Length: 79
Length: 310
Image (cartoon, rainbow over all chains, first blue to last red; front, top):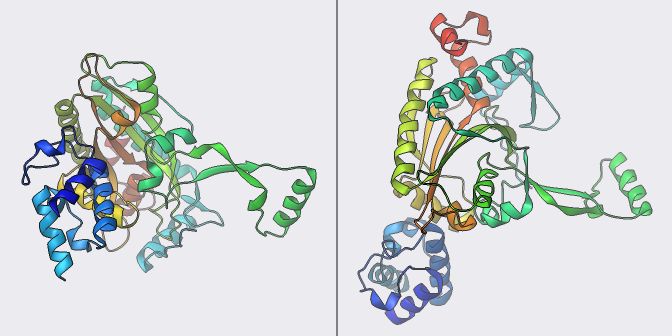
């Protein structure tokens, strides 16, 4: 899952650095991801993993890092 | 088509009073009003109050019409965040027969939109929008950046409502700061304090609130949550009519949203950020009439001396 997440981040998050240089728990915001880029990443994750983030998950902390995104997707896929 | 939002009974009653006293002049469209002399007099004093508060910064003065090149609306991504509020200018595009057909339909108040084509113009949705391309056109920012007073400009939001405080076209009294990120944040915070004392000084029960813009759709909910979490938008709210206090001023930290769109940067490539503050002049005027009564001659001396000073 993390490989796919990282690919989507590379395509949509418009980071100032290469995503492969970031640890799973590194902050994407600190790496330059803007609010608008976060929205694009969120929509790409939904399309790719065939899930829909509920309103309660539409907040910054959910998209903070590869690890937090993986945790949120795991939760949605179990539900 | 944006749905009409009915006012609460309190808002409807306040609107009826304003129209009865000819402070607002009603038209056939909700949210579109003319203004009578007594309203206008206070309105001008409110705008002047803001001018005085900002004079020490000697901002550069710019004034713009309430129209924006469509290209600029597209550049800043407005149609992604606020497609529901935008107003675009269309104009006739056709031959003589079509002009005749358009006229016939218009006489019957039927739909004549098929004879209209998009123009290069849109209605200005925020008074600061024309400022950024002007600054960008000058090249690199000078050290210290720039502060621009965009005056009191008409802006449009397509949201017909029965609440007199929610107009479709109204004035934003806007000042814009473009500079280094820390300077921009400090400027915004300074104005937040200044606005509160300004509004309390004229007898309004003004409070701060962390706020978000009315972004559209699910992506919009994400943007709004993010805006709140980062405290990018503050509002000053005062009671006007209705269950909740109404925002009468907003303080917006855009980070690099506009500077990236227009490639505004310092010589040497250092990042510039922007912030703007906007006072809703009609709303502050309405709040004053609500708080102190519909005859401004009878307002408390302290309030009148603040507004009619100098």
